[in-house]
Image (cartoon, rainbow, N blue to C red; front, side):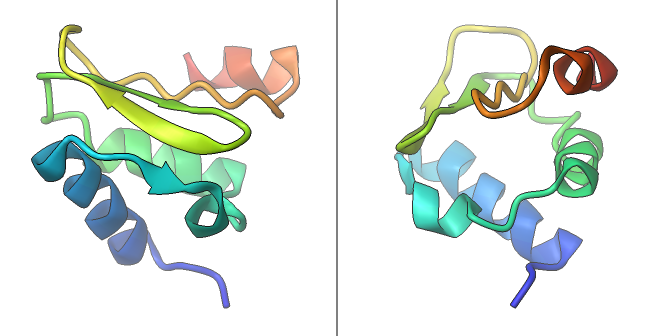
Length: 82
């Protein structure tokens, strides 16, 4: 079942609040539309940076805004997210 924008928001909120990792399984149905939603919903969280890798998402707290980097996205899609 696909996650709703609210569910994605809750997942990312948990990462932000707990500074923990999230499993790739939780990200398996992440679509480009979901990424745009996450970027929109998380624009007010300005304390960290989230990276999604093949195996996990890691939240780091040293940057002024959130960036999502998906290793399986094409360069064209990555450019669209900027």
